Image (cartoon, rainbow, N blue to C red; front, side):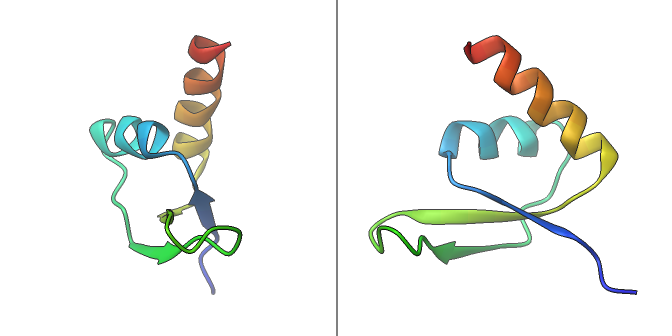
Length: 59
């Protein structure tokens, strides 16, 4: 079974995910701006919970 991946553009959000135990699988250049990186994580329910919390605290 193939695992689902989640691409995160924000360094701040990537750091929050990493601090909460989610491993960055790899980085790739951003398709829109080659000078920026996209951080690739395994998409899990736990990752989605941390993402939701990060969005709530920034808005």
